[in-house]
Image (tube, rainbow, N blue to C red; front, top):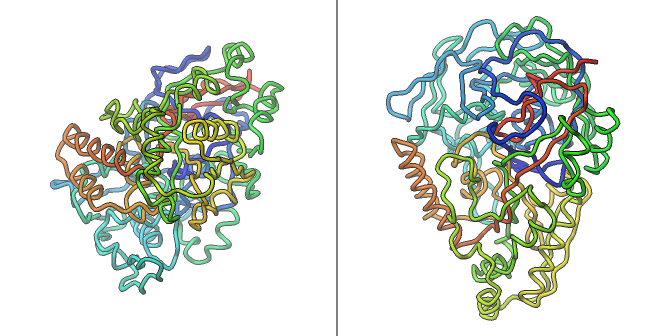
Length: 540
């Protein structure tokens, strides 16, 4: 979820994230089974969720957009409340070597326009994303598959990418209407577990016939169908007629509504004008008494960080980046602004994920004003430090700026952007004048998801232009490892290398808080830090 991921921007100042065992609320938060249940009591859920102007299609990489797509589509895999993957549209995913995977589809899945979901729906969708001229945000994820370099060749520094020599991935092969084979470029034992991410969703023929018309009101193969789309403002869904699968939802409809201010969403829930919102910083001390029995404080799989523009000359020196990191008093900032809702980050993988290693970043992520000053004195940094952030995090990064100024004596200012689309455009155009606020919410529950999309060269959320052969080698070793423990060892070595290069400064791991209306029932917050909207419903 990137935007996470995926570039992961969130509506509230604090993003929700939890493991199910740590959720604390007055409603039933016991973990459910893999099935989403059948027809339920109904009602229309009104959910605060930042809506961008990007198309709501699998080619878009954005956490908030994924939240909508997860209701409109059913992918090969879904995840239960504790983040365990289970087959959804996939009947089976098999391999003998962690390189070639045979995927068989369940019968009787259709898109909401009545057309069948088949092998072509996946193969064509993935090929479209991977083909460079289509400029899909999701493209780099398909570099895992054999033949990507032919469909999406790298551009030389400062140059234009050469013309692709192929339009389709050589590693994708349709075997029959309900079966296809995926051959990866390198072994990856965790490949089946990533296939629940929205970028891997299937697409109907109508998309390829006329993408622009399709994007006005996208259709999927999932439990809900889109009836209204106002880009940047609202998305309305209703139950898909005739959807008779395990992941059917209980609510009759879901309305996703974007708020420019997180406090407005919170007060809307108080007035029963909204059914779910994250808790703004200002209400962290009172939300549990404001919403007795209708709130949750949770442990996080998300984080807040700052990417550093390595393409700006004065940030090219690692000493500058490390000194800035050591100048930030993370604990004091977290204690003052996010009491009980965050913990200082000591790396780039959140604690609840399997393989997490405490202190993976090393001493460079620890507040050390004396060492920071000494290292800063060795640099040739000129001018001010300018941090770009979204408006809801302005207070947070003002405190980060103050810590940097107090420690290093350099002037630091905050440039806050009101809308996410403009903010995202600055990053994607590589025009950040200095550190840029980043937030990461996992797309799928692996260490790989926190370490590849942001830090591998040319990855979907690497807006720093970080490029390290040593880092890539460690990632390849991790992905090719035969077991999870061996993979974690390599992933944590990769984190240690990030601590030495410091292309990105981790700030805190997000706990979070969520509130919901009095007539919303069976609301369960999953390990993604987001409600399982297939289980929740309204009583009135």
